[in-house]
Length: 383
Image (cartoon, rainbow, N blue to C red; front, top):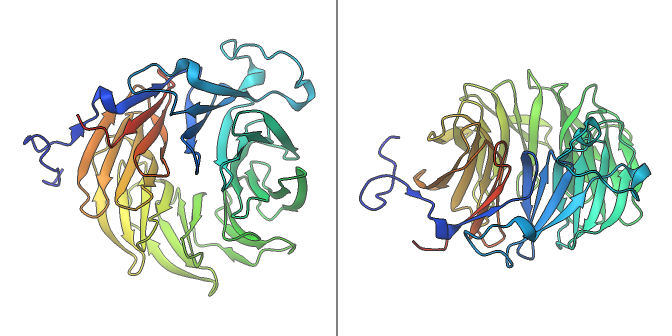
């Protein structure tokens, strides 16, 4: 560090997470890839390589209590044999491997959870964990799945190169978009009918429901584009790539606004701050960088990770940032304004995703082997 540490207990080091602040949710049999808090209640969803998603009710689990029995298990069975008894996830045959849960998203009201799987099927579940719909059309794994703001449509992006907009109520295809020449890696809605997609083909398409060609295509990246996100206003689209750059596009003008080139390795993901014109990028160079999007300048580098940073998230008020690394398995919580590292938690296995609850009180982090847990850190519990 560079003297940025707050004086925690006079030692100058960030506060370690105390047992009273920690809840470990156990039950997944393989690595946990993703997690997402329900927007309206204390439910946390997680998705794993064990062919399940789980919904955990955090009001029913107390810190430092084993969360094993608390999760509702959402089994990702093949649609053809949905009535059959699933073999236990422990006897993980090749068949289950094809059902890694790779992506999930709560609808805006928190009544439905959508999951995307390696088997190419998207599924819609109730908040209590019952399967309410199956969206089967993709010919390959689904890498990204998002509800629109109205909550009446789902957008999925797949290895099969397509993006599909689904009618959520009838589980039917509204429109399939076949514009990429290689796998679709990420999708993001701008509003209820307009969205963007990115791909290993190095391009980004901005599309609209009802149009059979892209509104815009952005071709500035030199390698696969890993993630895209619209800013809160919906005017700017940020992208990040294996080419070590992040870029911000003005989609209405159709031009590249900023080309941000300070990372030393691939940039895996990015997030906009909820209010300020600030963008966070997470890279395999073990840093998170914060960019002022009005100037395009890097205003801060958060460099207390040892390994690749796979996930980054702003708290809802934008004051704190959580980031997680792998294989190191370090969860770091920073002050966005100062860049101070204020809390650290080292867990077992790499961290693949981090997520803040709606109040900005709790952070969830998903771990891989050997522990395969979801750790929830409560920022409010004082030691």
